[in-house]
Length: 201
Image (cartoon, rainbow, N blue to C red):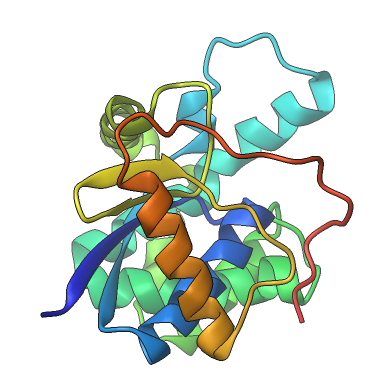
């Protein structure tokens, strides 16, 4: 039976992008189907005392996730899945950065979504919905983690954070191990210092 995996992401996060590419590899080698679900780093960080540079990034982070939410309203999961890939490729692989809303407009065109969805970037009417979505993620894993968050086989966890993303059967082996560890209710954390940045391939 196909294993359903919920993958919570914010398109501005390069680490979530890396993990999402891993999960797409996992779909190829395991009987798994990933559902991509928006979450919001901007909402998570509201009211927090942040470094000024990071605060500016979080203020701008509302824009692309608003567009993703509008795309979900328009075309459901398939729209989200396609748009996230198109946005992430531009933001991260092409190095254009997550403040580039031209990249988001191009992504909408690439995947055949209405161009006017870009208007959602400047429309705060979905922000309460984003806050609700973010709160649902906090209820799964707590508020001291970010994105990605994964739910599989009744377990939810932050991460994994990896670089580069494993491919092929190695992606499957990593998935098997992560799911096995997360399935133990008393397992909370496994971590080591990052020695490299995101390697997008």
